[in-house]
Length: 159
Image (cartoon, rainbow, N blue to C red; front, side, top):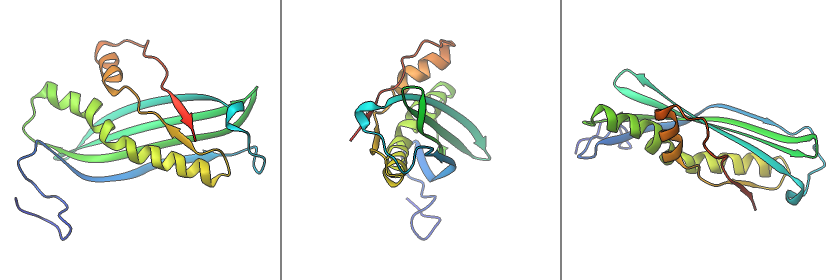
């Protein structure tokens, strides 16, 4: 194993995938009801998930986008939109395995950071901390692969 950076960034080894970096591409938070926070039991959540992959030179940029809107009755309480990306080196994978990795496994790797950012933003907005349940990335991948649009909404919980 050889390193190309001081902290091991860009290290290549026997694995088929290397995560080089991860970062927020876009973040939007709207809190129109502030400073009056709603009780979590009164909120209805609408969650959408989108996954995109794009080649960036020798690397693949995978972007996991999550949009959450919370409403109470007909009133919008808050919304969070986050696009979080990772740069992956996908080494020696077949075309099919590479596609599955980019649309299924890479988002699974990025999700814990997305969940933490959403939880921090909602908590810092004086709202009930929002904790997302991981989406079924395999079902999302299969739906995208087959062109289906009938994937169930993702679950959300608050703490």
